[in-house]
Image (cartoon, rainbow, N blue to C red; front, side, top):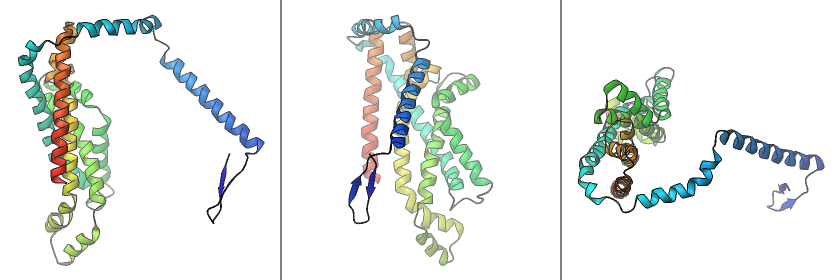
Length: 272
């Protein structure tokens, strides 16, 4: 039933007209039909015998994964270190590249809203549109497998994230502070250093640490496509059906993500 709100705050319930009721039921009918169509498309190639057997297979694999192979842990130390380096160096490279892009994309700092800003926005959108796994696949084909491909993949993926949030923070600054500094006859560099940068530093620090936390998680799977890190060990263990090793690797990844989340929370709390 529609609700009519009067100026004095009183609300009145009114029954829909027959035509309105038919329109509502017709809308629900279309929604149900569309849902049924989508379900049919999604399950067109499904082999239902595998689906019914999935609980049995999951229980069998789960039994093989326990207990973890703790003796395999020393082998994971170097890949884990590579994973942390991929995330950290990739984030630092992304910060260095995304800061100028963000200033070029912000309306109040771009040198040209007609030409430069659309180009900067295009770079941000292009970076965010391609997943880090896709970047890693392309870079492994170009540079070969290894940590370098993973670092560049993380950096290219992070430019869009950092650049978008940072240019939005730049556009939301208090312009009165900038005008006050400009009124003193300050140069463009001084306006930037004393009027804009201090206002965006808390947001910049939080964005950077948050992206580093995300990159820790993303870098753990880049090895699946040959971009280095602990994902290489995960792929080899899966290919050889070494389920106890898979369990240990998953536990190590979980512990790494939990620690990175704790560190990033502490850093954000200390900075902001």
